[in-house]
Amino acid sequence: MRCRSNEKPVRQSISLPPSIARRVRTLAKTNRTSTDRVLIDLIESGLEAQERERTRFFELADRLTQSRDKNEQSRLKKELARITFGE
Image (cartoon, rainbow, N blue to C red; front, side):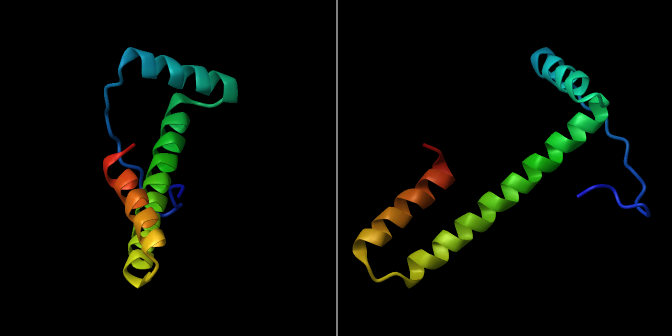
């Protein structure tokens, strides 16, 4: 999900809590890269994880609507509740 060569980057200013800023700087030093690159990688990873979770939710919802097994329905409902409301 890197910036394509024909896409112009958009400048975005954010404020980070000091503890997160420290962690980002530490990651940048460890990986010998810039803090900007670390932030971009973390944001991309988060967006991809969110999309995977969304896809999983809809897959489970589809399975729930198609299932005739009460035990599986119960398990799927619990999993959907966990995804929706947390643990």
